[in-house]
Length: 280
Length: 305
Image 1 (cartoon, each protein chain N blue to C red):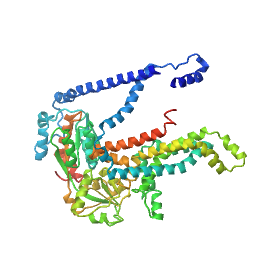
Image 2: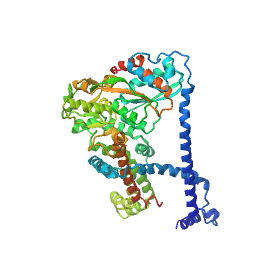
Image 3: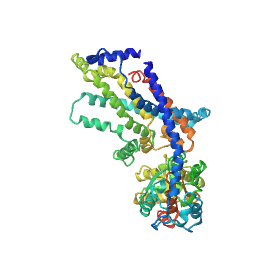
Image 4: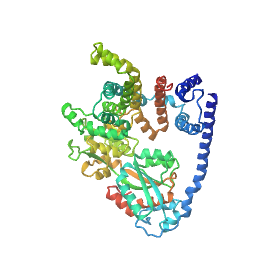
């Protein structure tokens, strides 16, 4: 089956120059670095599985602390993803469909959290939305609430770090959607919002789903910005990654068990995305 | 296709074997090379200002003589040392160890001290995982215990300082915090160290002694993070060390409390086996416990061991 695919690929791409060659020619020297790379990526996971204290595993991951942290992680990651979809899809539309001065700059600013070290992101969040922050002090004055050290702060930190993944993914999908569908809808009398909701959005579905899963996974693993901006307190702000880190200090076995839980969740995500990526 | 798959499997196995071979040969080679500097060390020509202590306090002298790496030369003259000394130190030692490192480098040209600071428990975990560290200074004997129990200490750790807890608040102390009971009031946002970190363990002890239950908003990974949250004004109070309040200068105010006396931290220091420069590491340890080193520590607010 793969051979057929390879043949097709060879015929279509190499057809111009050497249509007669049915097989991809394999540069065997590439296998050595590829194998080193594969090992490098797989061995840590193998190490985690080998060192997992399987006998204690049920007791380690069924403790109330772990359940609390896992639930907090799942809830905050989901909330962050929901916010990212509501806010991020429109941003992606603006970036993909509008031509305006400073678009490149806007895109750079929006994707900055992608490359910014999360701890630096956390400090930036404190300075903006903290109790003495630029915006946070006003919020405290007007509404009497302060964000840091609350579960909401975890969601804010996760959204800040994870939303760019969704924006980038959705923008890419939008560029793949033919804009003439929008034009056709307009000629048929559809309003702009109606066109977006009923024409653009349905075609964007898979792109949004992929972006949302990436965003969710990134939010689930968020550590640096969370511990800096939201602190670490069991039940309120101590998510799974924070608990893994804390457990590593006094109970390495628990840290391994918790890492395994996060690994299982990640594998489940990959399995969910297999149609999109693994068979690409 | 089958041929390709076979090639991948074969090359993977070859690489795996190669890696395994590399690591084992490296392991075999590493033990003689780490012993080499000790054998080749010759007496130094320069009489340095930070020469090891000879008869100051009994504990440091005992530790330096019991250390195998430098027992012969250290007693007489400073051994010629070079290279990099990697020092892991508790977060609360940041200010003092940075200046101790600078002084040590000046006294020993060619030596570079690379300090790394963090929660004592984090550092201890890294050492037991094999981090190449020459000297470890912890903020509690319990944390040091995890390193010595794992067999990573070269000798018995030496206690070189003591430190007492203090409440750090905003400079103007807007909540009028005057006692440990005040930080447990509702409406006062309190930051503590996690119980696994020495400052957290000491705080737990102090609250127990005062028969109070704290309601912190966050449990930080090291004392520096607690101090930062107070400095930024994100919390109203944090339990830190007296030395932290002193080093923060005008950015925070300190409030002493009676129960701190029942939760005094002792700071042990040890040369670590995982290090690559144990001779220079021992020399740095000697400097920390020497009168010159003690002077710097006590100027920063640390108490005598």
